[in-house]
Length: 255
Ligand SMILES: C[S@@+](CC[C@H](N)C(=O)[O-])C[C@H]1O[C@@H](n2cnc3c(N)ncnc32)[C@H](O)[C@@H]1O
Image (tube, rainbow, N blue to C red; front, side, top):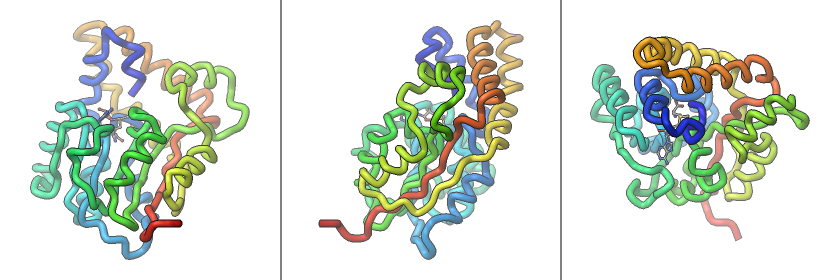
């Protein structure tokens, strides 16, 4: 989703557009499965927390593939309503709990999770802040899987640099995010870059709701924001993208 703070008048419309899309940012079933396969062999995954789950593109895969109970947290209730309906339709209703909450305030979520998952959402409370504040939610040896927008090159195209300086001023490169993870006390188990297909599917998903919003009420600013974001990716998408980090907390405390 484009940065909602840049569209104060259209914030509600922006969220509304994504209420029925499978993802609210680049990602896919294949990518969620790929990250799951990178978890350490034999990792127990009975209790999973999906932070900033949106309409549950990852949540449903996590519940289906791991057999876990998944607590899915998001701040926007209509996203969770979509997720609930999908979970019921797939017979997963009793294994997914939806919670409307700020994922930056960790107290209410409980602790001892085997796995915390966050696709495209950590940035909204600050990547490093997310690493530090979610770590106590994990049991020793539990894992955090997080995707984050990063620079892939040292000298990005000036157009992308200028665009993302506004959209995501705290964006860093891959190596920095790996260092951040180690600095926060995680072991880096693996990482991979999300494929361009994940971006294309994300934009394809919002095409129809966007067309309908334009027909109903103009929605010009939102349309322009989406167009700019997509065109930037098509032009400069080799220079930046999402990295998926698979992290694990140590099983015993380090001295
Ligand atoms: C880019 S979307 C990613 C959604 C989903 N994980 C996916 O991959 O499609 C970011 C999500 O984080 C949610 N979000 C943003 N700030 C939040 C906060 N402070 N607490 C909980 N959810 C938040 C948004 O409502 C949105 O659903």
